[in-house]
Image (cartoon, rainbow, N blue to C red; front, side, top):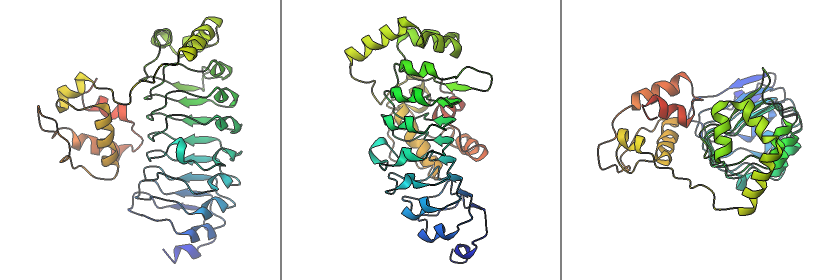
Length: 300
């Protein structure tokens, strides 16, 4: 893309749905660029120079193959929206200054491999949208309660059993707020409140009763829920030995146009169903999550 790198006056660049494997460092020479969309490529690493772009407000590198971010990645001066959905990132490979992006308003980390969210998340004081669905999160830091401007929080499809009471500081039940927390192995009191509605969950989290339950749970500190969660319903459709983890692995392949099941071994029946449906769903909306794919393929 040598000619492209000379177009210094462009403000928006979309290179999504290609098979780009490397982002040239020279892309940072596009000093007027405000929106960069690299969604759905084969990118395994990003250049350090990217975070030096002076006007970049929106960066979408979702649905790639990132398992690490470059040193100094958090140095973006005016970045407002960062989409890292559908990669292989975890808390272990975030650069030290990742949570120093003070201008960030929306952070999408869904469908990655996070087990813990660093407490530095509390530094993102302007954050309004935080999407953490479909990771392996086993707990959230209390510092998340410092994000007082947060109006959307998505934590569904993790391994969470309790929430820090500090989440009660947030306004997640107003008309414009969104709080999604289903498909987690919640302790019974939270699960019961969730059946009634999010507002009941928030009221319960703010209660002294919950603080007692939370502190007792933290003191006991048993092992976290396992990553693999076998479901009979999955085996009914796809054969014995098929788990949520297996479905996740398939889903990650589908995202890079790999519909090969040859290395999967399900003894009861061959895996031949629903791939066309999954392909159609992803073509219609690449942001479908694991649970939505499972639901659409008749797994309840």
